[in-house]
Length: 381
Image (tube, rainbow, N blue to C red; front, side, top):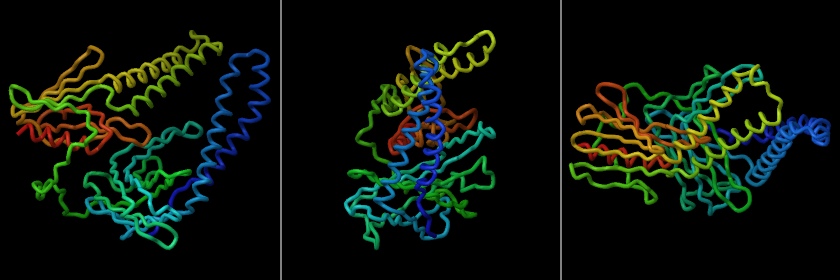
């Protein structure tokens, strides 16, 4: 099966042109004269021409990328990949330099649509994601450029492709990118994934002893120390996700500043619309709390033969949870926070009785999260 890359070039130009055709007259015939007349509220309308300029830059960048690399194709070895099995394919990347290092990301996405008409919103939640680097020596020469080999092992417990409900879809997306001088290479493909074959068991039900324990990443900032009473303490320090901190802080600042500017510049009768003020205030408080949580959360996990104890601290507040060893089941990864299409992983502790425990690790590196889960399991024995 051959799958063409999703360049979105036509959509980008159509949307950018439409936006600017609407924003330009409104700016020059409405906002600019209002600003000259001394109406402060008109400054808010300048958001639309700035957004139009950003859309034009996006469309130009996609065009330059298309001119440089042309169309990429994904060639699957089989018509459909299957959960629990391998995904093997090749990307025919036209005019990709032979000394490139390609970053591959395979993501299972739950795409939901809420609302109707002009109030429709589309949300994409990462269900599962795996990444790998294809070194330059692994690239193969092709007729029109380089061939990028693709090899992933799909999980058993992720959902297969689902398209029966357009408002609630499951999409498997493969992204290939390479940092280059000038325009970067960046293409996306939607890959069909079928359910696992009947009777096929997950690896944990087969020979679990052969599963390789992941190594600790060199960049890991987790503190590991022995406990005098027996066991190991794992300390996850605050400020461990700089990118997530910057994104959440910027988004919170823009929302709060925009809301404050709106209430100051626009005549607003608080008594006539208290619900709008309440909702805006609640959203602002939630965004600020998420930012503080991302910056200052410190998590300590003590694992030993007697059980597991989790302590979290945030700005002088602390809360704890614990479970004895006999109640602890499997330790798995779950996507806790998501910034764009980048997931941050927490650990989910299964229990024989009661609700599962969650360790808010917020780890960007999946290998680091897998290593931490393996080390906690080892310390519990």
